[in-house]
Image (cartoon, rainbow, N blue to C red; front, side):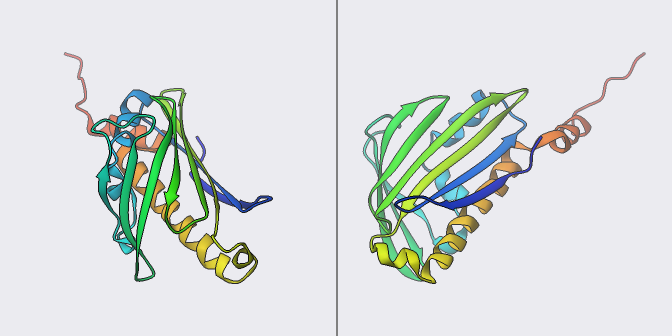
Length: 180
């Protein structure tokens, strides 16, 4: 199976991040973890001081509003997203309504792949002041966004395993049968 990857490319209006990862658990075991917004705190690096503050519905569904607080380079940030699409266990889409970006549109896809699941994140993003996208500031933004998604992938790998190596470790940890 392929290693996790995070790629950022420019688009007409901003940038697109694509993060791909394969884990050794079936989609039915993986999707519920992502359906709980509180798990975002586990998937976000500590340097962001990320906390889920509110959600508008008990169960996540289309239209659910989520409010977070975090710190970007020491500055407090309020972030609110809306679940635009909710299609368990296949995909969901969240968009930023209020926060540090002019646009943040995040599509999460979960595809059954053999005995495991391919997770794909596609994020379209751009800054509030378009001219800043052509300055050195974007290298900082890209570095931070890449770092966040690489951290996220490492946590996911720890939780759900990756590829043949993870499957071998599972087989080694499980009790062995012996013939009598």
